[in-house]
Structure formats: structure tokens, C-alpha cells
Length: 219
Image (cartoon, rainbow, N blue to C red; front, side):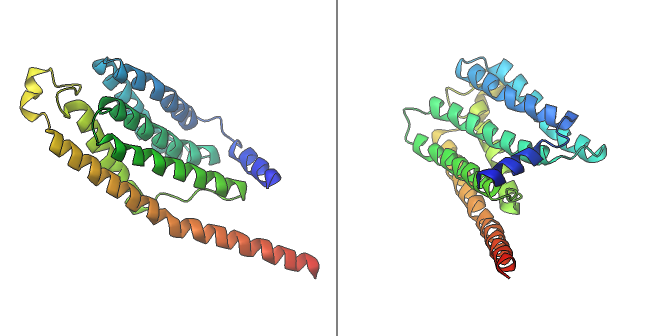
């Protein structure tokens, strides 16, 4: 298994030195930056960093496809950057709502991402690639970003824009914030379960392939 994992990881770095991959590296590097900025209440700077990171996310895939820079590493880096970004946003919200019961729901997002990472590592250890995003995964990710960024921006008295007069009339109540978090959590776990059939299928196909190879060698 160790040799399979080593070979599979080695394949990831074939033709890795591309502009899209460097954009993904940059996006990952920006995650701790905007996390610290948010926690330290430097909201404007944090939003600027988040927007810059979002722009790189928008362009890396387009550049890869247009200029034929698609790589095995890029297929892994992009979802990894997304997962790390989501976990960073959740950490920000947990810090923000530390004295509120909704923090326990927020921990579910971290559990989901850790399960996805473990599943991806398991597939890599067997010489397989992580399962591609399903429709529910894309829907859950979109809802997550829209809801969570809205909560960070206008989710109550301690939100980033709560002190700006122009946004006073649209500051969200705690009830609305809680409903948004719960909806996002439900969609997140629906998306998690939507990956299960593809994951199981890959594992079974790999197991059958290995059994076939053993049979052939015995003959």
C-alpha cells in the first residue's frame, strides 16, 4: 500500500509547474492571512484578501483549460483549497459565536471536511483519484459561501459591516443567522452522502481489479 501511495503521489507532480497550480498555491497561502485579519477585526483588509483569493479561484480553472495546463496536481489542489477555505471561514464563525449554541452546528462542517479528506487519502493509498464533485456538492458549496460570507458581513452586532451606517437596515437577526447555518449544514451532509456511491464504486472496482490480477498470477 505504501508503494502504491508513493507512486500515486509521484504521478501528481508530473507537469505540476503551471500557472493555475501556482494560483492555487497562492490561494491556499492567503487562507491563514484572511483568517487572522478577520479574527483581529481588520475586516476591510480581510475582505480584500478574500476577494483576491476568489479571483484566483475563478481564473485558475479557465487558464488550465484554455491553455492546456490541466494537471493531476491541479485536480487535487483546487478542491483542497476550497476545503481549507471553508474550514477557515467556519473557524472564524466559531470564534465569533463562541458563546452561542450555534457553534456546535458549525463544528459539523469541520467534521464533514475531515471525512472528505480521509476518504480522499484512502483512495490515493489505493492508487485511485478522489471522487469528482457531485451536483449536491456544488450546490452545498455555493450555499455555504453565500450564507457564511453574508453572516460574517452582516450577521448580527459583531459582524464586519454592523458599524457601517449604510448596512444598518439589513443586519441579520440571530434567528435568521441560525436558520442559515442549519440549512447550510443540512446541505453539507446531503452532499457528503452524495459522494458515497461513487466512493464505494471506486473501492469495489479496485478490489475486483486486484482479485483479477491475483487470479491471473495464480494461473
